[in-house]
Structure formats: C-alpha cells, structure tokens
Image 1 (cartoon, rainbow over the protein chains, first blue to last red):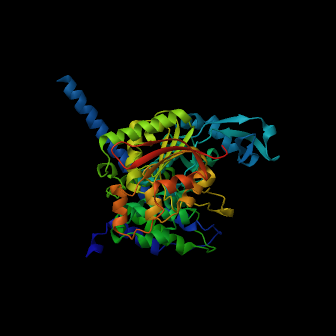
Image 2 (image 1 turned 90 degrees about the vertical axis):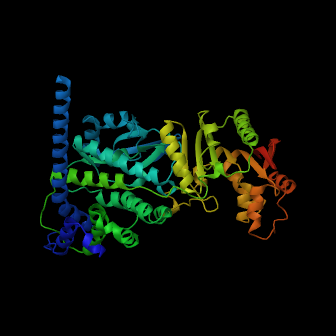
Image 3 (image 1 turned 180 degrees about the vertical axis):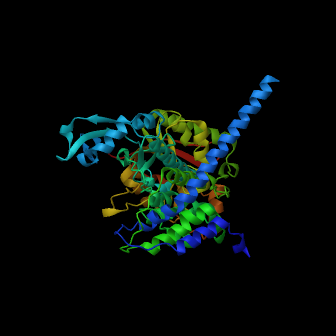
Length: 73
Length: 443
C-alpha cells in the first residue's frame, strides 16, 4: 500500500507528464527532455519558492515584533 | 586551454566576448573570487594567443593537484554540488547563469571546493530554462542520491560515465521510496522519463517561457534536495582503525617522530600518503605547509578525514578515495581527458606506512612490482616494513595459506635496493616494524 503514500503534487506531476503536449516546431538537442521537464516544473517550483520567501518574511516580521516588545518591556 | 613557458593559459575567443565582459564588469568575478568560490586569473598579453580568434588570454591560478569526482567522498561531492548552486545563485543576481555544471569544474584547494571554469558563465536570457539542469542532475544529484539511498560505492559509476550517471540507470537503481519524495521524483525519475520520451525526436514544445521565479524555484529546489541527502552508515572497515591497532602509545609516538624527522631532512614540496586512513601522518606533512594528498580505499575513513579538515580550517591537505591496487586510469577522449593517478605525479615524497603487508599478502603482489610502482610515483619514500610476527600480518595469514616465503625483511631490502637507496632506517620501539627513508635511484 506504499503507493498510496504518494503526495498529491507528485501524482499531479506524473499525470502532467503523461499528457504532455507534442506540438512540433523545432528540433532540440538530446537534452530536450530536461528542457521540457523544467518548463513543467517551473510553475510548481516557482510558486513553492514564492511561498517560502513569503513565509520567511512573515517569520522575520513576527520575530522583529517580538524582539521590539521584549525590548519595551 | 594550452601551456606556454610552463604556465597554463586559456584563450577567450571573440565569440564569448560579451559574456566575459559582463563577468568582469558586473562585479560577479570580483564577488566570486573574494568569497573564494572562483579561481582567480590574470589577463596576459594577447600575443600569447593560440589563434587569431582570441579576445583575451588569461592565466588562472594553478590548483596543486587535480582530483576527480570518483575520488571524492560523499561530503566532498555534496559540498561541490552546493558550491555550484551557490555560484549559480550569485551569478543570477548579477544577470548571469552557468552554462555548464560539470562536477569536473570543481576542484579542492586546501580541502575547500573552488570553481575552476571561468568561461562557464553566460548572460542570463529571460525566459530560458537552466541549460545546465541536466548536467547538474547527472553529475551531482544522481550520484549523491545513489550513495545516500543505495550504496556509497556507487560513486564509482562516475568513473565509467564521464558526463554524469545516466538518469534512467539511476532511476532503476534507486529504491521505490525515492519516488515518494517530490524532489527526487521530479529531478530524477520523471527527468529520466522525460529524457527517454523526447530522446532523438525532432519535436519541441510550444514556445513556452520559464520566468525568473520558476528559475529561482528550480535552483532552490535542487539546493534543498541536495542538502537533505545524507550518508547514514559511517561505520566502515578502516574508519575505526586507530582504535583497533596493535601499537603501544610509545610505538605510535615513535612513528610520528620518525615521519617528522624524515620530512625535515628531505623537505619535500608534495607528499602522497598511500593508505593514509584518517590522515594522522598526513597531518604531520600538511602542518609543515607541504601540499599533501591522503589516499585511502575506505570511503568512511576519507569521509571522516574530510570532515576533520573542514572543521580545522585551511590546510594544504586533500583526502581522496583510491584503491591503490586499481588506481584511477586515464579516461575520456584518447584516454586523456581525465588523467591517471600516475600522470598526476610524481610526488616529491610518498608515505607507505602499514601498507606493504596489505599489498604483498592480501593482494599477492611481489616486492619487485611494488618497488617498481613506487619508484614511478615519487623521489623519496617513507616506508614501513611489517614483519610476519606482527599481529596484523598474522591476522591476514589466518585466512590464507602462507605461500609468502619471500616475505621477510632481508628480501624486502634487497629488492627495494634495485630501485631505491636506503638513506635511513629505524626499528619502531615495542614492535616488529621498521621505518625506512628511501631515495629513488638516479635522483
């Protein structure tokens, strides 16, 4: 039953890869697969990265707030 | 890359002019060099150019000893990967990106990784994916994942595959649980699938762009994935060697004193410590400012040694994994892209301490062949003869028939005298061992 443990985003990515568009416009080098995968991952990883930065900012904000408060006390 | 008057020069062609200029004018070069991430270089007179395509000719600082990824322990490869990522992140801040991500672009100087390919930077073009993504995965992420999840010895696949381990092979070797990690699933397993799906097909995708955020997200994800990879089994054959020896403290100190004395007599510039374990004797050389390479067959011992070096700060020492009975060969095009161990020598001095019995008895090598090989890789040698009465030799003989009639001190000296002159020798106190300082004949 290990397969059930698969995270939803992993499953989504597998599905995306299966239904990948095949519209042709140019010949790409043997690194084509690496190129295409990056384009697919970009959205997900970009969003995750944005969240991570946002989260760090929130943490820094509250840490700053707490530091200020303890200083005032 | 070419040699002139004993120094190594690189030509920057006009084709690369705009990228080179940006590297220098943007401040990226200074930033990387001052943080010790990139090898510094001087621009030399253009008359040294090898062809009329030359825009500049540069002379990079030399690395004392070129090592290869299949000679690195787990943490060395991991540090090399993280250094590459750090450079890529800095380059991105300055509007540039790495176009190559070969592990061979990293070398170790004073046990710290440094990037040596000054001409790997190109201007970042917005919308383009990371051209070096495939190489990063094959050279760094894939072997690290194999070493971490499957077996530490799989680093040796890098010796066979010069452009990194093919991802389909890695995908088939990794355990199933790696498919449950989103990052390993995407960067290795789906990456392999995607490569085979689009291999040699004259197809493309719609003109899709990869934004800056996606680009940074990809680099961040690779960094996090590499950071999470650990090598858990630290306990190997030799890593606990010094807790399991037959030396008395007096004998151990005597050995150290002799090494120091011989080093001070000869004053070599380079030392190779063969079978140097966690570098106890290597340290005596590196403490004197001598460029020292400490080779050992055991990845656990090399790992421990490397971590000790990283903690101790900058010292001219480099621990490497090497099987002396099958040392790194010349590989790549014309067997000349990556040099054999022998071609990277000779060293001014080698240490062969507590080694001879392993070569002669465990590996059944005649003294003649051992002496011959050693004479090809050094000018001076400190070698320890371990007699048959020694408990370590007895341990080796316990599991095999004693067919080693010639394994005695007289024969050892007689054979080695064909290649070396014995400059000095001393019996180690409280033991059946003798230290020799030998000099290669003809030097």
